[in-house]
Image 1 (cartoon, rainbow, N blue to C red):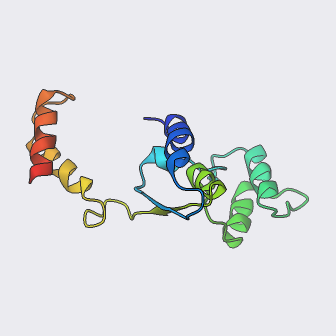
Image 2: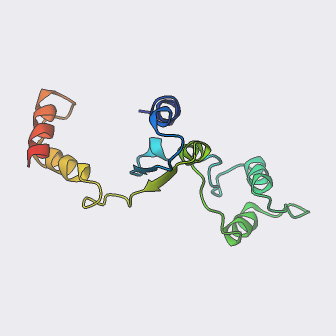
Length: 141
């Protein structure tokens, strides 16, 4: 699964089937393909051009002369910008909201218990029939 495939399905299949007149809350875990950012947050390895684009997108004034990346990163951190995700913006455009579960929280995300069962009991290194059997057993358990 990739972010692009999930976002396409999310926008063309899932959201199309929700009522337009009621706000729905869509619960997602933090799988990477659920969490592609509109503009990726920066690191010191990001290019200077990425820093400038990020700051302009978030309406943060770019100092002149342009400081070193570490100083720009601190300016961005001080701006308290929240990450924005593509699927969240898609949901919002339809009047719905995305609620993200905490990472690996098995009480709120029971599939984590099933995968833990599979990891514990699976002895084959590939996706095989035995993995499917362990998945079924994990769900039953």
